Image (tube, rainbow, N blue to C red; front, side, top):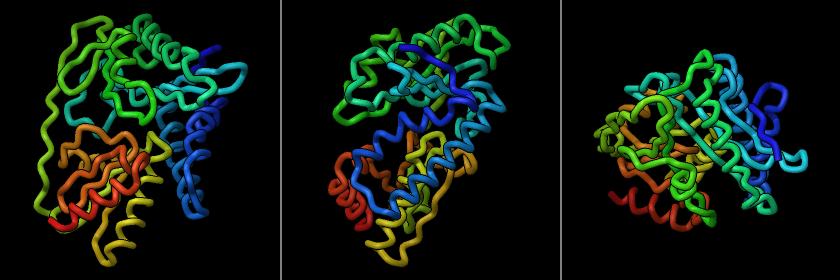
Length: 273
């Protein structure tokens, strides 16, 4: 096994890791077109990050095949964070979806490689160590808990996030609670993250579903990096791929992927409000 920094030369290998999910999900031609568009949205985000920050992802290879990834960002470069902490690295995603490569240590190798660089000095810090690393684990259905995974790699629980100290003590930041906006009570807001190729897919698939169920119901879709104010004024803790707010009610994120019937029930309940 080996770990490499993402660059323009191996950028497509990141997509090969995440493409595994599309292979096992039922889809039609329209879904495939949305997925392809999502690839382009993420590719643009990655290229922009490579220019602004340097490497923003690492890839694990087994027998020459990419099978896991970790994606990260300087918190101060995240427009969807209202009070970013300087010299802090945020892990956005750790993903190892290939069944035959499970429990091969790929995800652990990626985290350790990143932490070693954070200690010795990432290029984006001018080779100086960062202060600490934070992450907000997301649930992965049918997989070991990411919270437990990060704990095994030395992370501790902070204020609504996990952290690992590098050169300085952890400092929390204020993360306000979500409260529905009055303007949202008669519409649906969909927020998606361009750092995930499934974000665009989620946004426009959910828009398609809601408009087919409730013709004429207004739906607005926002990219949280290009329209950070739409994310910040709603104070959601996390948008890993995408989140829908139906008439002010935040729909559970994971069930869109794991239990479509439960997702539809939540939408229907919210529309009755």
